[in-house]
Each structure stands twice: as structure tokens, then as C-alpha cells.
Length: 317
Image (cartoon, rainbow, N blue to C red; front, side, top):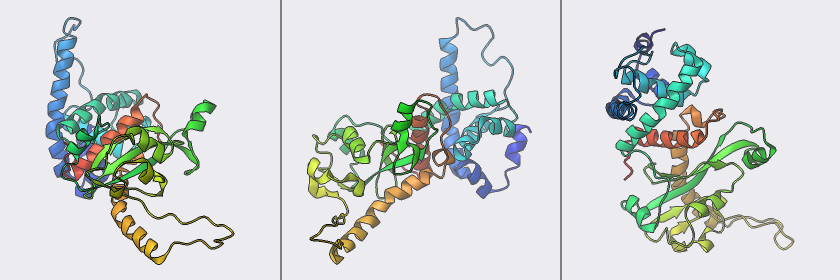
């Protein structure tokens, strides 16, 4: 099947969204920047290899993915549906190895395009001032960690690292921070699923710095101890934990007021869950991750977070 014919078979907006994760309008907006980035990377490659080049730029056999539109459609289909390279090759009329090559080639282009559109979240903050610059118009942030299925490593040591007792399977994990509008501000580095949510946060946002001095932060019960460890505890909101069962308290339960407060806190904090759920509409974050290329799992969630921000017209400074 020729690529042109494949695009012409898309019937309507709903089908296009199911295939790419974006509306046609959002796709066109991204396509303009994506096309420019292709030219930038292509020209950089020409200049870098001009001494060793034997044929003129643009020479040689033309691939299946001729135009930037075909290339963007290809990489978005991969992220949205996450088929195997055999299936990608069948759909787009190319060999599995060529499908893999195109994915590896187009991922940096998509990353550059999303960066130029200011849609990519932050990965690291040097200090509190840099953090406050990004959230200057935000009064409240929500923090959570997301896990996604991962392939089972052959080495027992890596199996143990990636096995999540919570999910009862091998996973990888990231810290995610969003604002009340579901804009994803921060996506932490990808780590093995056995890491605890709170220990990961302390590594990325050291308790020695006053990160929450100018913003309120909501977390779930996985972050027990955060009010004691971090400065400005009055700006940190965490649900009440049910007391442990004991001889003195055989039927532990929260008071009516505590339950009411937990419900209110949950209504605020659920926004980050919705943002994570929106990202996982891209099946590459919901299905078991199969690719073994180094740092590929980390690049994927970074790009998908950028696509989520782009879909909702969110800008990250």
C-alpha cells in the first residue's frame, strides 16, 4: 500500500485522532514546525559530512515516507498505537528494519519540533529560582508518580530492580508534576519500578531547598513524611492516614472531619491523575514496553508529555 493511499483512507476526524492522538488542526500546527526541523537537521548533516559525500544532496533512492506529512503521521502512529516493527513495516509497506530506522531517525525531529513550540516539560531544576520562574503564574501544583509496564530483564539483579511490588510486574517509574489546568510542568527521569515515589522526589527536589515557599503542593499518601522533611510544610497538602490497629484502638478509623478534608484534597489532587491518564492515551505508555535501546523509554514519556501539552495548547517556559 502506498503511503499516499494510506492517508487518503482516513475517513474522518475521529479516525485521524485514533491513529495519531491529535486532531487534524493540531497535526497541521505541529507539521509546520516539524517540516522546518527536518530541513534544519538535514542541512546540518550535509554540512557535517560534505567532505565524505559522494552524491549531491537530495540524490539517491526515495523512501516510502516522502513528505514531512508522511513522516509525522508515521511517528505519531507509532507512539499512539505502539505496534511491533513488523506490523509497522506491513502497514507502511517497508521492512521491519526500515521501520525501526525511521522511528529512531524521526524521534529527534519530533523532539526538536515540540521544544520549539515550548510544549516539552522540564526534566531538571538547578535551584528554587529556576523552578519558580516556570510556575510563576501557578498557585497550586500536584505531584504524583506514574508506573508503566516494562519488559522482563534477563539479569536477576535488573529483574529485582524493575519488579514493582505494588503492580506485581516489572515496571519503570517517573515523577510527574502538573498544574490545575492539567499542564505537565515536570517529568522526572525514568527509573526502575522498585523505587519508592517519595525517595524519587527527594532525589529530584532536595529537601534542603525551599521548593514550596511560593506555591501550594498536593500529594497522595505515598509521600508520607513530606511535611516533616521539607521546608514550608504549611503549603504542602497530604491526606490523613488511617491510624494503625492496636489494642487501645481495635477499630481505627478517620473522623468525619478528616474524611471530609481527604475528599476535598482528593478533588484537587486528581488533576495530575487526569493528566497522566491523558498521556497514557498514547499506547506506548500503557502497553508493556518492548524496546531495548538505551534511554528510549525515557525519551518516549518526554515526547508524549510534550504531545499532551500541545494537544491542550499548554506552554512550558
